[in-house]
Every structure is written in structure tokens, then in C-alpha cells.
Image (cartoon, rainbow, N blue to C red):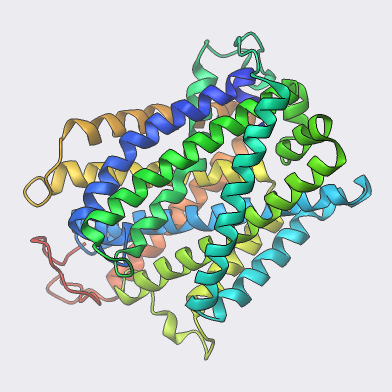
Length: 419
């Protein structure tokens, strides 16, 4: 919320509503893919169906993977920021260390197996959804609805045309909803996946929209915009203290800790599973060659998240994740529209609208980052170039003289097996 408020001022609750609308159009493609091709491969399966096994599928799949790891790092850093609210200001610099400790804990829990993960996820989900909903409702009752005028002009966007910052901020609000994409990985685990995957995606987005908007309104009613921006890494806790007092602060921090803790565990599980799937499909080098470690995909995923947590602050982590996700999202919509008209029943206008929205948001966001924090663009560009080069060289390494690439999967679509 604080990072969005930096771009749009007191309109940040509206940004969550607008973000939900964009994600609503975006989710249409994922619902159609999930209903048609439910599997544990999720986004990787969708991209493979659209573009066939090869460099294109590998690059966009890795962008999705990296965006998931970035989300882990973002949530881990948020865990550190909220936890440190229990300690004196002198400990403020230790947020990343706490985030790293959380990632190590998530690794241990994931190593213990699916039953432990499932039990932990169910227990924490009940606590965090109920607790956050209670916090949002109580905040609205105590502080009332904030006056949203749009008069506050943030420093980051004061020289830009009116509305430009709002469009750019949607990149961050979209990032807040992107967790729905991990549901697509559950096609092999749930009953009647051809219907229930799509339903789960829609329900999750609706729940998140209600909670995000209610929380944003509660925070806007309790704090001024400068205060929200100042406390951007722990805005909920900052808003709870003046309204509910010390007990409210402790309750908010406890809920935030549970929410971030469970979020990291689930994200580590999903991201490592996606990387393992890419390895099995020979879209990335085999992970079985990495020593005798149990679940090397999990080790690599957590290690990358730890590196990001140590190197970047929350704003930059969120920005990189948003850029990677939006690029991958465009590829999903285009793949459905361009390549699967004969295999999936869908209304072509909806993925086209989603593409236009994604491009508009991404372009505005990139321009603002160019003006205010070009380092984000440099890091994102380097990441994309490295992924592209590495994936292309890997594909060449197992291409035979006839141009065929034996992949570790059945090629169920009608595309040839070439890059």
C-alpha cells in the first residue's frame, strides 16, 4: 500500500479496485487454460501448449519462476519489517536478516513433506484470512471511510501527466493479486480439476479484492498519505496503533507475521515445484546432477530468494517482480489467442483486452522507473537477457542434426519439437 501511495497518493484504495479489474480480465486466460489442460505444470503447461517445447516456452516460464521467487523475497522482507516493529528503532536494519531466517525455515518445512505443508497452510490460512478481515472491518468502524479526493500529488509523479502515475501503480496492485497463478499448479491434486481450478481462481481473486480494498480504506482513514509513505513497509501496523492502541498494534503484527510466514512457505513450494517441472521437461538443465542433495530445485529456489532479500529493498523487489510477471502474462494471453483457437473455447476479445491493459500498465511503470529508479530497469534487463541467452544455449545443447530437441515430456500439441 505504501509503495502504491508513493505513486497515486490518496487514490491508492482505488488502485486496488482497478488492479482487480485488470486481473479479472487477465485471469480469464488462466481459467480457460486450467479448465482445458489441468495439470501440475500450471503456467509451464499452458506456455508449452501455446508455443511448443523450446526456447520461447523456457524463457517465459523462467520469467514466471523468477517472479515467484521475487514474491518470496518480497514477502520475506515484509515479515522482517513487521516483526521488527516489536523491537526498538535501532534494530530497523535487521529486516533482511529476519527475512532470510524465514526463508531458511520455509526450506526446512518444505523438506519435511507435503503433509506438513498442507497442515501448516490450512491452519495459517484460517488465521490470516479471518484475522485480516477482522482487522479491516474494525479499522473501518473505528476510523470511518477516508476522504478520497485525488488532490494529493506524490513527489514521484508530480511532473507527469495526470493519471499517468495511477496507471503505473497498477503494476504493483496487480502483483498483489498474482498469487492466483499458483492455483494452476494444483491440477493433479484436486477433484474435478476441469471445473474446480477455474472456480478456485475466481473465488481467490474475489476474496483478495474485498480484503485489499477494505484494508486500504482502513489504512487511509487512520493515517495521512505522508505517514503511509513513511511507513510503507509496515503500513498496517502503523495505522493500527493510533486507532486501536498497543493491543491493536500487537494483533496486527501477529497477523502480518502469520500471513507472511504462510505465504513464503506456499510460494517456496510452488516455485520449486515449477522449477522441478521445467527440469523434467528439459526446459532447463537437469537438477538431478546437483550433488546428492534432496530436492535441489527447493535449494536453488530458496538460495535465489535469499540473495534477492539481501541485495534489494522491498520497493525494488516488488518492481522487478511486477515487470517479469507482466511480460509473462502478456505471453499467456497471446498464446491463447494466437495458437489455441481450435483447442480451447474462449472469447478472443477478452485476452486481447488483457494484453492491451498489460502493455499500458507495463509501459507506464517502466517509464516511471526510468525517471525515478533506473537501477530497477537495469537489473530487470540484465535478468531477462541472461535468461534468454542461457535458455537458447541450453536448447542448442540438446538439438540434434535434424533440428529436433528431445524433451522430457509428451508433445501433445501439433507443434513440431523445434526452437
